[in-house]
Length: 161
Ligand SMILES: [Cu+2]
Image (cartoon, rainbow, N blue to C red; front, side, top):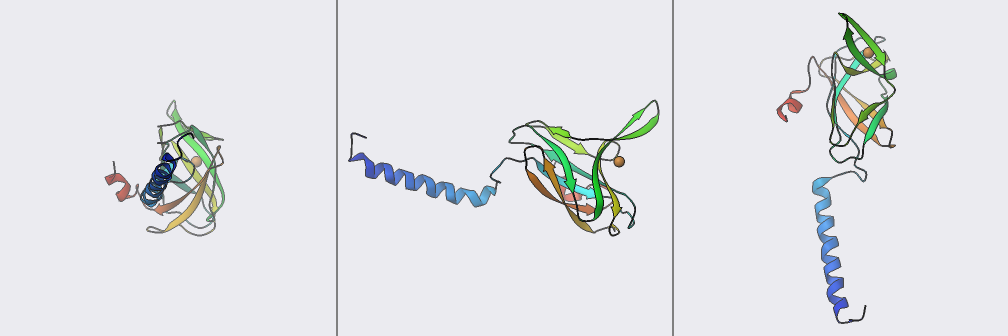
């Protein structure tokens, strides 16, 4: 700081830089932490008191590595993570404590693989309905998602591929 005449210019540059950052913020709308991103969340029709499934795509474009460790939704008594697999022609389903989402990874929750199970549904899930859920990550991030009730992944998400 030996050159006082430079200070006004520096101050001007700083103001300009922060103004640029402020202007850019609304366009990106990025959360403070680079949490994993949930898209194309959907669920199949199911009756009240029964069990529904939840499917979605999980991406982690900005890292750091994280893991899905829990799910909450007001429509179910409990929400669990499961993984279906077929071994020797027999389909099995196991509970999963955590699903890793490395940086840059895409993890798909879909029928026949990873999925959510919503037990003791508080209300019926009807075609065209939607309901909220919060996905909890090991990092502490909580990501809200809206599940659309349908027979297949939402069309809007499919067109983004
Ligand atoms: Cu299951």
